[in-house]
Length: 539
Image 1 (spheres, one colour):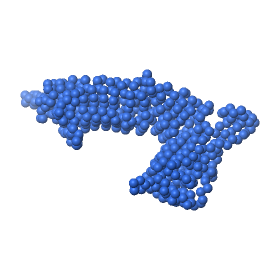
Image 2: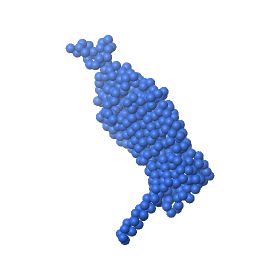
Image 3: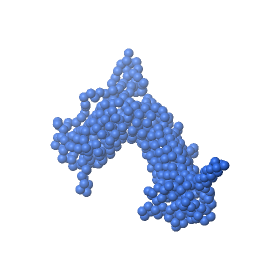
Image 4: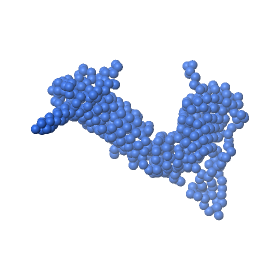
């Protein structure tokens, strides 16, 4: 009998514990939640369903129950599941969150700013059915694993879901017309996000830092998507655009213009080592292939007539290009991409193994990000024929040790050697590289400032030291972009040739000017990489 009583007592204790852990409350009047949940049991409840009206005073209690008080104070609260689907949040003068001069009060049908910030015990939240807005940082730092945003919501605030690392999928309903800066940023577990038809634009930081994100979908209202928005999303495999969008489209998960004539962005983590740009694409936009991690080869069709500066910059696995022989604008030599007339170097693939590069005699321009990320290149010689060097042209070439600039340079863009951690020598043969020709931050980099010497023609140290791109002075503050400036040992007569420089065949033509795959029987004309032309006779 005694054993029976002990068993019964244990059962009642367990039932009592279960009763304490789960609760349903109908709040008859806003601000009275504490009448239903006492101080004695607020830290024992793990599941809570609320109907009725809630205001700022009630939110203080709910935050406490979910593990947070103020900004940096944790509580013993255990509330992990909160169902507010039948509740209404109403306006009041009761403050539920204070930080410095910031005070937050409840508003009608709004999950207010910071309302559940740092409530890390909260793993499930069912939002009120009539909700209109989710405020700034409203759910930041929670442990939510999923969220359903009601179709009545029209606005999502800044950083509203920031650092909600356990949510894998978010659907922004068609009713939402505003999404704040960084609303879904740094959600490390997020794999898919779907933006509804009501959105016309997104801030560039919206999904910044979402390292697990694989799929992004946008609706019919989206006017544009800037490629910068996808920077650093190394897992991104697909960008989908709803049918009927008049501004943008997607082809096999690749972002394009609505008429598919412009390739806007190739997802960085899209599987496959080879990609053929679709026929009909005329323009490859800046940054289109930036950060790709799998692509080794890109096929360029004959329709592509414009490749914007930096289109292939920092394509991390790229080793080469295959180009349609009928393409009128571009050609490939030694797996490097040039304009057809060999006047512009467009791209040296990141993973192409090349120790030394010397510009052919025909090259006058080095495109933006042309060498970006190539780790094998050690020496670059820009001969006197080169006139312009684009932004970040040699950036993050971590093996680059020596850069030689010929006499003909008339323009150098910003960040040209950023991140070149082994660069110790820049030779400048020009005698007139004034601030009008060189961006003031062209050589602004901590590695250059610590270890790189600028070599200039004899007698011109004072001239160069007076240039802002060498020795920056503003309002009495000085910033020297090179560790040292020295004169060259010999008179700088120019760099029209370098030992080992040799021209190579670029294309083959018949005597009547027809482009050929290879020399034909009889007389053929060979165009060389240095711009020269040779004739050969094949028997």
